[in-house]
Amino acid sequence: MKTRTGRNVQFRRIWPGETALLTDHLKLLSPADRRFRFAREVDDAFIESYCARIDWLTDIVIGAFSGEELVGSGVFNLIGWTLPLTAGAAVAVDADLQGEGIGSELLRRLLVVSQNRLVRRLYLLCLNDNVAMRRMAQRFGGRIDTFRDETESLFEPSLPTPLSFAVEAMDASEHLAFWAGMPASALIQPRSRAA
Ligand SMILES: CC(C)(COP(=O)(O)OP(=O)(O)OC[C@H]1O[C@@H](n2cnc3c(N)ncnc32)[C@H](O)[C@@H]1OP(=O)(O)O)[C@@H](O)C(=O)NCCC(=O)NCCS
Image (cartoon, rainbow, N blue to C red; front, top):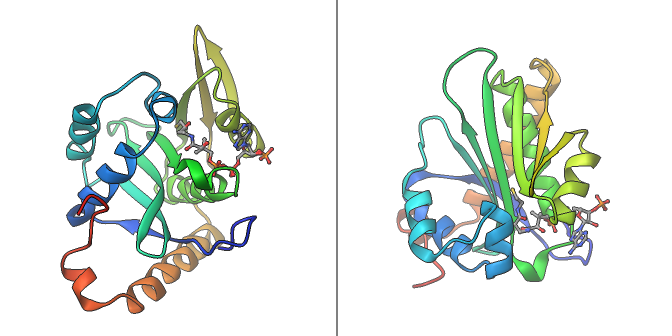
């Protein structure tokens, strides 16, 4: 996608061998954005442990890339296997690219992922003073509920349809185009920003 200021950003799944990319991206968030992302203040060790605990069998991580740099992330995680299926999601965008539509695109994709995996309840938690997240949740039809200092946005995706599968397939075709343009070295050992 072209961002509102004309930057070219591509979206694709992040895979288990790329955990370092996600860790570096989240560690680059400012203290304020870390607090917004995790609903509390967190240090580097917490972020490392959070990324190491991603269950790559059921969780889905979508990355937003500017060139080879991971500048945004959306994490979908299934919460147990009880019916109706329930999941949580969280998004983060590098500070210098916020307000350009990347967070909205990540959320749109997370909602399609949820629908196609029969998730009937998707929760996004944020702090009450997270204006951007609250606006985004409202725009995508989330039901907002506030308790103490936290805001819970509940989405109730419809059942999957041929169209929703087609939309996810089209999103995935961008992933293929992305990889096709990658040098082979990047496929073998994706570069982390700390390197
Ligand atoms: C929340 C976040 C992911 C939004 O990403 P983004 O790329 O800036 O989002 P978008 O550009 O798509 O904008 C989403 C909405 O927020 C608004 N917005 C963006 N930045 C804003 C700001 N600093 N203040 C107020 N509103 C803001 C946009 O105007 C837009 O509103 P609209 O839909 O009414 O036009 C990003 O701000 C972020 O990473 N924050 C830190 C981590 C975090 O809060 N994560 C959410 C908890 S799960």
